[in-house]
Image (spheres, rainbow, N blue to C red):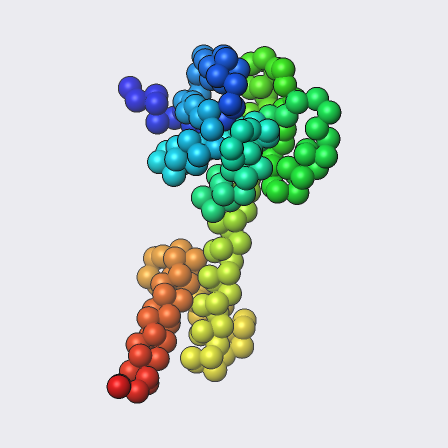
Length: 199
């Protein structure tokens, strides 16, 4: 019975060791896997290794701040929440602009944290699904463009051809579209390299 695989992994970053340990223990008790970081550098190391489902970052840190860590996390597409103290409204505004899924004001207890964490995890999943859908739409649009050019078709005819091909091959339209785009990119690169003059 491997329940570990079903648990969501959180990264918790705070440079106050007592707060970090207390919150981490409470979140583990609530059923999460929790990695602890007492510095921004350690947080980035853990994110590169573990890819948490959500990072909870103290906004003010010695060394790399929560803001700086959040900027770097965007490279990994890791969603994040901020921990703030009272009276940091201007930082909260900056955090939202940076893409934070929310913020929690310290001091707080686990009963307050869990609903916020669950809401953020839900929003992160919606954003991930939307990103996938947009990527799939992009691939399909590019594949339709390739078929239009290759076969001198209208957009509607090219889409029908793509759908019929997918049906005949028992594949999803997006999978076939991705294959067409990849094949076209390979052909383009091969054509470009053979066209370049040899020194």
